[in-house]
Image (cartoon, rainbow over all chains, first blue to last red; front, side):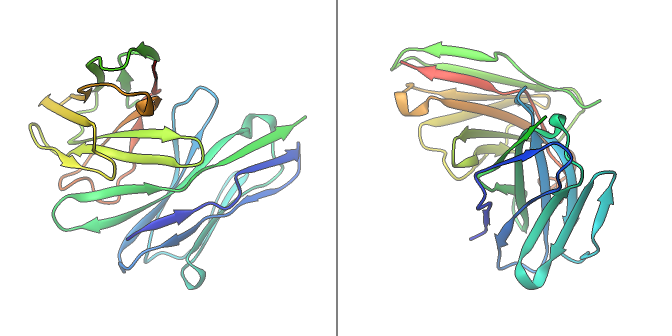
Length: 117
Length: 116
């Protein structure tokens, strides 16, 4: 069965610090997708990134970067020069390709990031 | 912009009541999902639907049912609400056939349900 673990329940940093959110996953499939979502205090989850299992290239988008390593089953998320607006709960999620019903998301427990001024 | 709306942000119901949570999406998405979110547990899938009148159980379907009579609307029903169903409920939708393999899901703002 698929599983996603975000061991860091809460992280607190001071503005401009770099911070890395960890995500470890388990799956028996060779084809799968990994996602990161952000949930600000308003409650609505916002999609950040998707990666498929055949693409281990790291990605950078502004202050955000993602490190995907199949060898360690990890998909970590780094925020560089954090800002107060980055304060949110961040979820990592895994989607396996199922024959009969397509794609379902399994979420990690979430990491509450607080960026203090 | 994709828009997923949920009928209520906050809802208070009594034990034993029948509760309807409504979700509407305006992007003609094939797939719709209901999750509940609890502290320390992340989001857990209750039910999902990849076509009108089709539904599939997720990981925690007990105590819930769903209805999808129209493509844009997906309803979650608590037949007889219990206190352990107090939670945040999130609806999502995604495009693509066969469940939208690999496609991102778009979420509504959530309904915080309290059952007393």
